[in-house]
Image 1 (cartoon, helix red, strand yellow):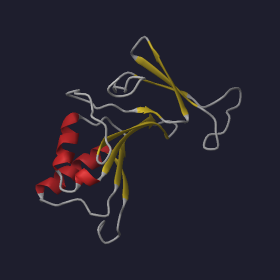
Image 2 (cartoon, helix red, strand yellow):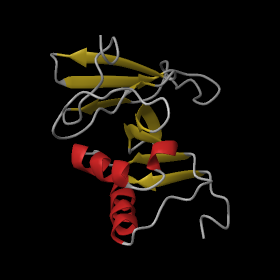
Image 3 (tube, one colour):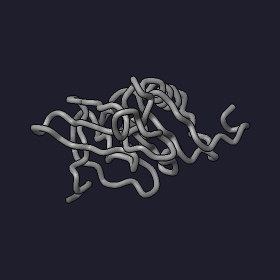
Image 4 (spheres, helix red, strand yellow):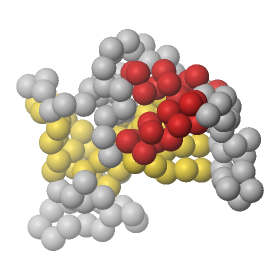
Length: 153
């Protein structure tokens, strides 16, 4: 069906993406030639999930983006290209992969090396909040971030 519809972008929950990848591998299927970008989010992407994705026929031509954001506000705050054309070399984690760098609408501050505080900056996509600039603060302790300087620095 995706082939017939010339699907070029898919936005999928991480668990569904991983299950779909496994099913496609099991059946020896390839990704549709029209598919250019897959965006996943909702839970951590593990190294073994990415390895499975890379074994999938056609995956080398598809940008795989891992996204992260506050569920309560439905904002995507971080993104990282994990695979496909132009993807950076990822650090060896053995577990969860980086969630990436903050998007332009997000301010990030790391407290004591473990707690990440995020504040969305106002703009055309996010109106100014009463009593202050930006949106709610979100904290995370689990998922690894890319260091402030980026990969390889």
